Length: 281
Image 1 (cartoon, rainbow, N blue to C red):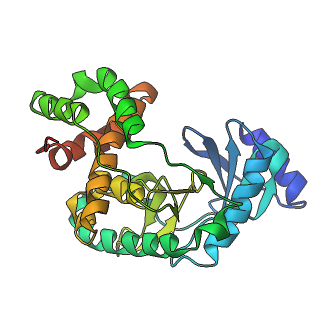
Image 2 (cartoon, rainbow, N blue to C red):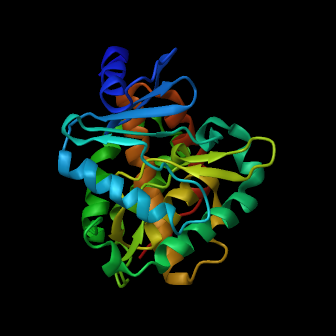
């Protein structure tokens, strides 16, 4: 996928549209996105799945109708090429704003409100749009342990025994009801106005699923700190901390493999509140 292919799909889907600039916006594990004239985002799946692209487009329209913040609303879909385009949302990715921790309480309140709306959507109404993604806690822990050897050398020495104690402990119990959620609500997918710190959009709903309500809270805890946990019930809080600890090892491994320094910096900065103390079970 390159600028020429972007221009090709624009010609096919928006006849008469003349793009002045096409620049690579972001490349993640699943997608490559291009900015067109600062107004349109054209995204390609790295492994095209036409049915999945069509389903995501329908999901985005459904979500946009109920959530309190903007989400990508498809301008066009070219499912056979794994392509989805939408008007560019305003704001800066939270991951690109190091001072985000100074505004953690406000951000946590806004994002917790978003999650409350998502989690209140009747799961059966999203069953045809979002799959179940709810692996056992023991598998989460096993995957985190598998990432550990690749990242151990980058962890400050004082945190290694605490990480190892976490990996050796039993995970929390699963007892939860599945809800519809974003399922990848890390700082890279949250757009904010850097002047007001208002959330201006939520990106990348590719992984949206029916799963544990604690999971997205866990990713926000990883990226924003303990303020995210304040209003959660104790059982949800326990699982959110667990997911945050597992995901920080995965994020650091991804950052080291891909060379994405800001992801590594984000993961390492979370260690003090994630592994400042580890309870044994």
